[in-house]
Image (tube, rainbow, N blue to C red; front, top):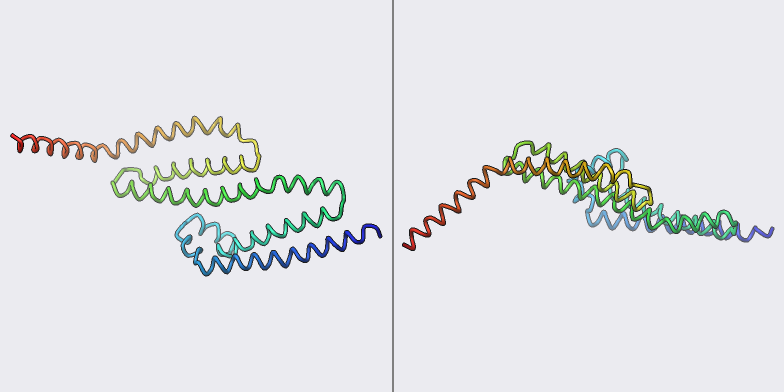
Length: 210
């Protein structure tokens, strides 16, 4: 009987949290749909693959994540209202960790999107200058950048990554050296032509002054 008021309060909080989560998540989804964010991101192959696996759209996914975020907040508040010491300690730990969890998720999503944009730029640039092994170079960059994004995400989630850094540093240097050699070999003709052009212009300028 002494616990009954707290139980009723917790149930009310859960109901309010469900309503708020639904409303806010739905509002965010509608705003994204009106802004046509999904259409703009549809050019990203990685996002398309992720959405296809989840059988949803970008707007619905973000709306669902926002709703879940509010559900979690209200569930934690409801647990705290019950005034059970063990549960309250758990709530405090979750609230302390929650910003890291959100930051990690944002880093992962934004990082993977940025990786695809960077890789697309590298592939288009290398193909434009007719550099051999353009797809191989782009694949190397994708692997390294994805690994960097994952490591940063794990750091945000407070997961030990020191052993990853131990292997990542020499691997990154080795791949960077290989890519530098590939770029140098691919651009050798372009640099040579550019040097001949500059030299010819300089010689012509000297002759004109004479």
